[in-house]
Amino acid sequence: MIDVIKGTELIELIEIPKPGKVLDEILNVKKAYLEAVVVHGDLSEFSMILKPDNHILIIDWSQFVRKDHPSMEYFLERDVKNVLRFFNRKFKVGINVEDALRFVKGND
Image (tube, rainbow, N blue to C red; front, side, top):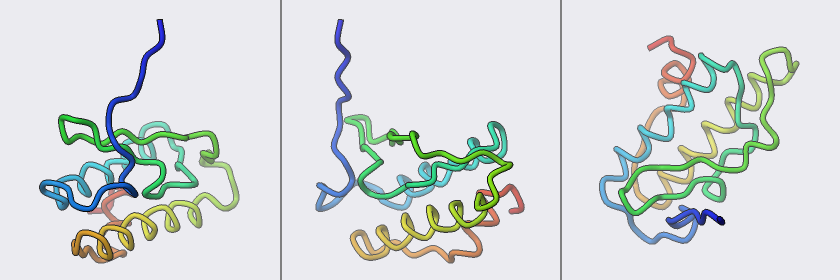
């Protein structure tokens, strides 16, 4: 049996309902950072799918980095900045980078 992912990559969407709520869900990569101690490493509008129920599916974890990777913090910051830049540009949702990073790191 073949499963097909239902949804649309964020890059393809012109608008989304409640973009702030969707962004909050994306920033829950916090769980990967705090619990699995990994960072996606290539998070962008191309690796996020908005499902029909308006929840996010983050795909393409093939370039994730572990806590012992010397550039883990760099990749985390790049991932968060990519997402924030996209949401600000496309959906006019602005969140401070430092606040978002504190949240993802569990320092909120």
